[in-house]
Length: 112
Image 1: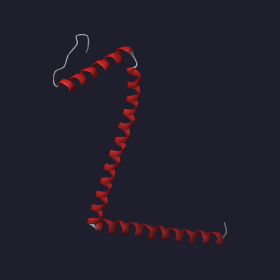
Image 2: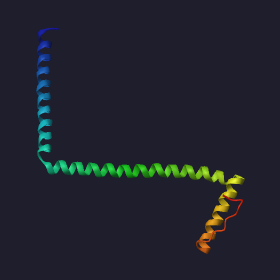
Image 3: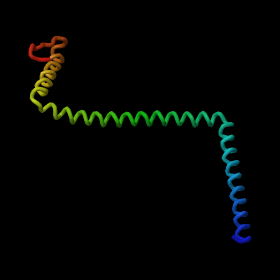
Image 4: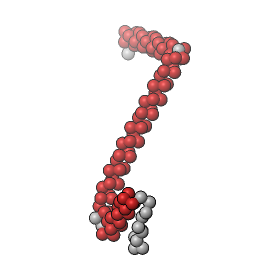
């Protein structure tokens, strides 16, 4: 490597170091301004908490919706089975009887 290339490389390194130093000072100054303003910190943390809660609510809703869809599909296949379908039909009859007559429920000995 000759002297010309070496001097260019040294200038480049010096410039890169100055840029890095200015960048670090700028970031630290921005952070100090942010931390120095308690209302800005409070507002940022409040907004972050609200968004976290909103995301959690949406996520849980989606997960439970998927679970309900899967369970509905599984149960729709189970109802076609003779024994399970018969038991569910008997349960529906009991609930309908309760709704029509009030608290009087007729229990079969061969049911649940």
